[in-house]
Length: 493
Ligand SMILES: NC(=O)C[C@H](N)C(=O)O
Image 1 (cartoon, rainbow, N blue to C red):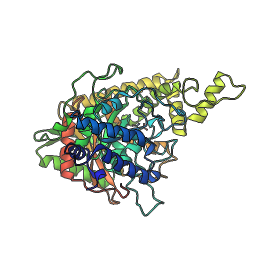
Image 2: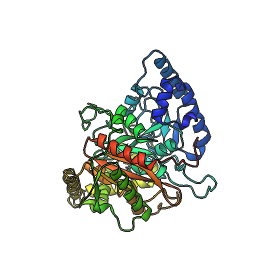
Image 3: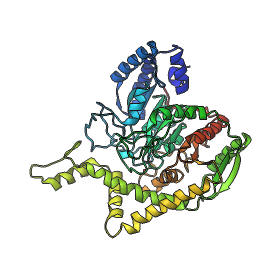
Image 4: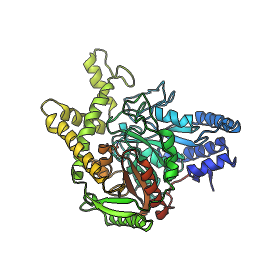
């Protein structure tokens, strides 16, 4: 087997048994990146030299018997996480050559545990999008695109499209990602890999470029549910630098992947059967429920009555918070500055923001400013906050009846790069199954579960109680075992 084809768990074993060194493993990934990144555009920045040096340091630690839990594992980092001394772009022109003097808590945790960073991964600009086509560094191609049909390039999903494409194409063993409304789970599903958005507060947001602070949450994408569990354990933990970080112990998530689902009650929300849902997706959902039933789980129909308001609520709350968070890009403190000889301060702001932000980011800033403005605040923002509370309450009531909820991850498989681009609302519909977990702060896991008629991956989603990622992992691993998803993308290292 090629080294790049190992799962993260297999890679750890191979490193432990000295069947491969961290330097060899890192070189294997770097040569894949060199060959395939020009086509896929998954990485914005490749830090080959630093990666080789940190792999050598990792081998030295292992030789001294000081191996950490992720010792020598090559990972990619979404370019929304600040990385000390490495340019961080958020896929926006407005950050210019911004090179953070500090490391995000999540990436620092991964480094502490021995991981090797290969580089920074592409995304939708400021994580706003579902197709990775809004990046100022160009779109990412889904590695499931037909190699022999360059006219039909597929999107990898978004916003963590670079993370998902890199992992699927074997250009990283795992990657960090973030999810505000579906940005981990939708690209994971589109690329045939696993990804979890943990409970809000599980991972520190410190050092992650902010989009919508009450919804943003970091999490891993990887080839298997167990790999996600291993990564999440390292990424998680209390951080006094993030006031919303939870001060709770971090369980052994990988151990939970081996738990039986016997006796678990699995909820099936009636409201997730959307009119016009593709029959293939409905069939896969039913298949997933049958798999869990065969393993001893009980299937329980439930109702989450406010589901239909989730998407409009998200697209009020998220832009509102974004307009406030993005006010800091003023051309004064850091990043891009566009000014004329006779510019005053206002002119500097306007020129910088006009040149620095892309169309989708501008759209969100305008929506957000509108819903927060005097006169409209009560009608939009305040109302959305109230509806958000009702959506969260639906789930609280459901947890009295069920232990986890299973739904499709996305309403379709990966679409072509030129589709849905001129209609933002059609693009927003991608998030229909995922935004509820963000609004309610719940953990959500996407598991690759099958292929559609075109041979493209489809995923199922497992939603769990707050801070009960262990049950989510147990159910996800049970689905994964039954699905036995072994299909591979067309473009792969
Ligand atoms: N950031 C996310 O979670 C992606 C979501 N599709 C959005 O555009 O807001």
